[in-house]
Length: 354
Image (cartoon, rainbow, N blue to C red; front, side):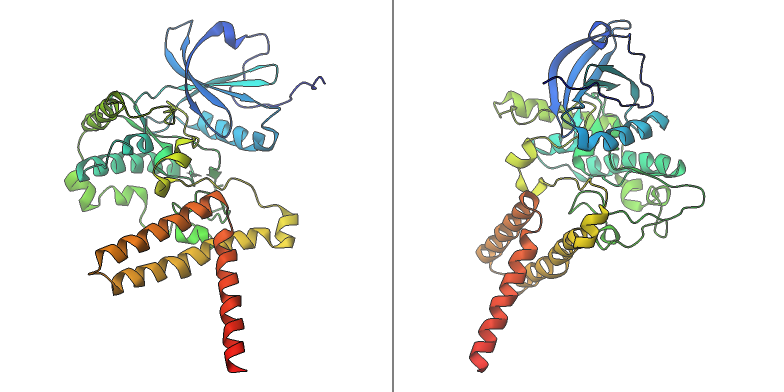
């Protein structure tokens, strides 16, 4: 059955006469995100290497608002710390988004080859904070800072990406309290749905922290991480699951297949009034509160009690990771488990006392 033409308007949209397949040469796929596929490409007019994100709008109807939001924010940004957006083209139902190509991969990619040392951490944090300082000066809030959304160029430059859940503060609005982001990377006030604002050290103030001042180096120092990752792949480690996304940062399948402790998805949906009436949004908050207020502290106490028992502590950590993986795969399962355990405990207590 034929589909009706897709109507979508985003900043930087070129006229319908322009054919992106003639303007750009599409090369190998470098990523696959929740919005579509990302390819390395060449701008045939300038020979510039670019990243091409191709989205089928008919298959991404529910995400069109997020796509428009990301493009709107990126089109308003002009900073060396934010991924650059070059324009968009619509061909049939396919939206071509042309962005800066970042060949160094994401921080998540680079972690697959091993941990970062403190100098690398401080250097990367310094660049991230510079990016946040710029965004905040423009009254924009990212709301989904995580390893997958921190991208590097081949020269070690660090840039922020994925603005699908970014927010804009007006001159009169100083607080936001929308529940968006990635669980376990969220700030406590976001999880608790308290309004978040500027009443804490700013990004500019954190740049003066002694850890960063003492340990940060030039960004070229980070090229060692990129070279290490290339060596790691050359040694025969599978790259099929990697799909380093260049200038895109949507979570790929590798997050579900390797290093489950880093596997967290982004909460993107806007609050639905009907769901709020039914308590679904509140259930999600209760689930995360359950993890942060009950399960995590309980595991911490158990490990402290048995701090000299290495095998028992390892078993506790494995159990903790398994719960995190289960919650990421099936949000709400932890809450149900705790409720069921409480019901069983109460029933057993009642039976014993009768």
